[in-house]
Length: 207
Image: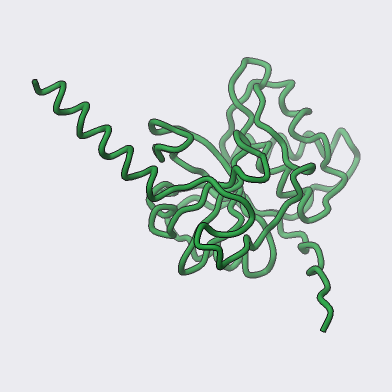
């Protein structure tokens, strides 16, 4: 009886999470807000496995962020890193970037890494047109049915909406949309990677 009750509770919680987090395109579910960072679909990287089969979500996210700010010299970074075991942490990312750039005979572009729960850095990054790579714990009832160790790209975060470009779902209508509170809950004590290179210029509009 207890097992049955537990299953019902879990199902209800998952249904609630799914109602809070939705798949969508480049405009918020209420149709009012576009994403702040709209990386073209043909520039998105689907997650793959490293030499040991472990995922390459971190370097997939980092290279997509590099593509957004036109760090063209870093194209191929994810696949280069995938020749090694997958999985990542800040010190490993430092080492891999250093080794990749040394092999390519290029300087390591400026970046920062942050570990903590303060999301103001993310708001500021998006306000300046940059695309952060952030950790995401899943358990959303939409794409992930449990807790995961994963990195994605944050493409919107304001008072109403947060949106994630997930390298496990890179299609035009596969962004994960949620409230800022839902994002904060799934970011937790998170890890941020941010390129400091200037973002692309804004799209011109006829005045």
